[in-house]
Length: 110
Image 1 (cartoon, rainbow, N blue to C red):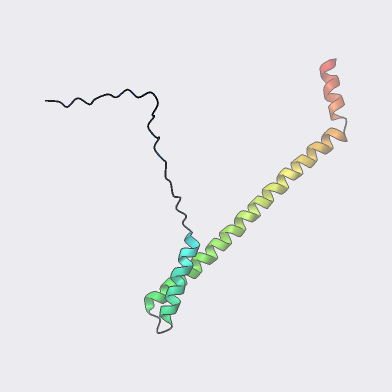
Image 2: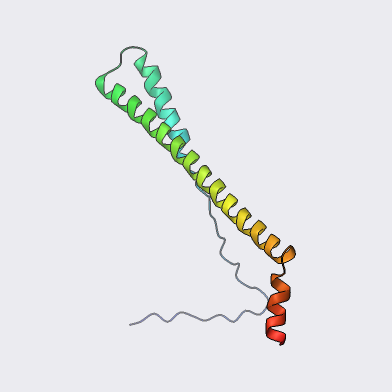
């Protein structure tokens, strides 16, 4: 037959809530690649194999590509900033140093 769980009625004692245990895991790809390269260099003190040379070259190309990509992004951000600044200066000049606002208001008031 089925087991029937007994239901306890407790007024003063409450069950403790479950604890949430989260340990964040951080992963630094650059640091890991650097550690791998250091190990390879220590091992390569003896002799460099064809695979080690290929991996070193791949690592250097990857590092240069990332550096180029970062500088390209910085240039794009700076260019975007200059465009926004130019637009802002243009509107400020247009509003404060021309009669556009007066003409615009007088057009709708007439």
